[in-house]
Length: 224
View (cartoon, rainbow, N blue to C red):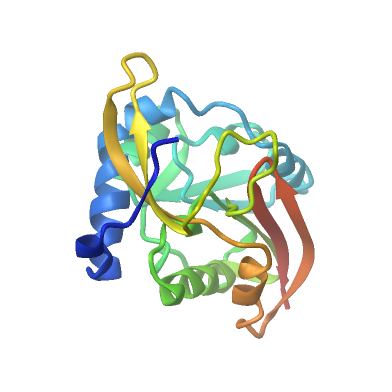
């Protein structure tokens, strides 16, 4: 994989600069191509979504092309993404999706029974932003509600095609046919227990489950 460490001239930039130039702008550019390669719901997420009682209020933050939102039609599923292009794709599919930033979500306190954040928080450059993004997930979730978080893992199994040597990387996205690099995305690869350490900074949650799935660390927490 052609990932590379953050160049020093970029690494010295602000979180806002990196997240704008190497997350938001890249995803707006690659959204159509990215969407064409993303259609399978990950197993643990599918199990979590299947557990929702009928008529529950659900939100996925960083919903991308909305694939996770389409496996249940008996719940009230909302979505939010920072990319205007992903929002357009979702709305063209009839999904209830709006534009929003994980650091300041456009939802009231205690609104949702279940909240999902899949492959999102690893795009945030600073520890503070990663922590604040989780606090926002907690804020919009009802007391006793559950929150599902999954991030890319630094530790990759023997079956993985990835071998990360740094935690902070620029990862290219290539056209699936031509292999042309269409853009680079910033990632922070999470070490084992790093996600739990962030959760431990938040008072009103408890950890229900931790898991490792196909090169990703995941955690399910409950708001108390």
